[in-house]
Length: 388
Figure 1 (spheres, rainbow, N blue to C red):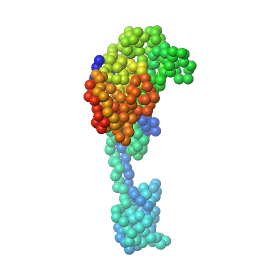
Figure 2 (cartoon, rainbow, N blue to C red; figure 1 turned 90 degrees about the horizontal axis):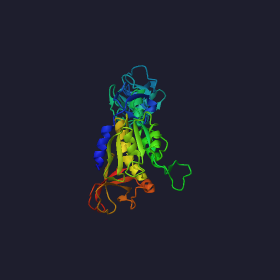
Figure 3 (tube, one colour; figure 1 turned 180 degrees about the vertical axis):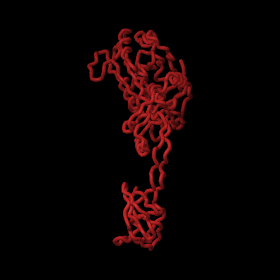
Figure 4 (spheres, helix red, strand yellow; figure 1 turned 120 degrees about the horizontal axis):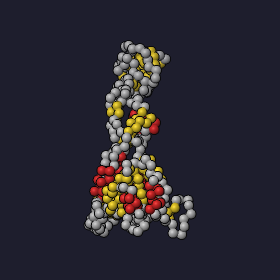
């Protein structure tokens, strides 16, 4: 068996960043920026007013000015301010030539075409200089997940098309005679296929394009048929059939199909039976069939691989540190990822940690990480955890 960190290093060695494609800005949210992009204009492109008020060459309490025009957003005042002159101005409008300050309307009294600066005059010029947000050539650095704030920024930079990494195409295969799809009537010895549905959802959140292939029954011919449907997948993920039981055929079939296996067992729980390699041009991961094991391996292995394929840094799942809310006994020889809740008093692992209990995983919002042979821990000891 190999360690979790060694398994992840081997996975990263198999994963290659995918090609770049251009997409319209409106479709770029949730994608990964593949190349650094630069602003095509200053923002704001002119000195603009930060408030509604009056643009003046100078201001002091008691001074009077004649209003000679108006400057609104999209309709500037076309002229130059002279002494004792004012221009009515609105937020975002260009500041007229000759103006050095904007007095907010609350600090002014108006009489027809004349204004009086009151003793309420505040400090500051209320002018946003040209380029105060960004200048032509300022960059948004790649790689990065593009979020709604980025979309607004790129739009204001006048970037209409965005270079993003192509979404990884992922083929998902459940294996086993015991499985039926949700909504079907299971036989007396059958269960509902849940793992690939959960992994499908996780892949969608990660920015991949998952495809759910038919369930592969427990025969070499059935497995070969389903593997023949992977098409142009960048990554093939099988669930179940990766251990050493008589009915666990995946390892044998993919070896016959020419897979170069990278590893087979990882010193962890849940999730010990795990394999990966190259199957033609596609990378392959074989996840364990126990529901919690498959989902935990999805967080620890599948998600970092997808991020790496998208061109993001090849890094393990995010870990944080926090105190335990309860005492824990010593850990055994495998790294243990304990399903837990984050509570005000600290991390509380569930008492039941069986790898078949999806109800427990559904309530968990963290995986407490216990290194191999970690000694007994007391409440308030600080430990690593993976947020879910």
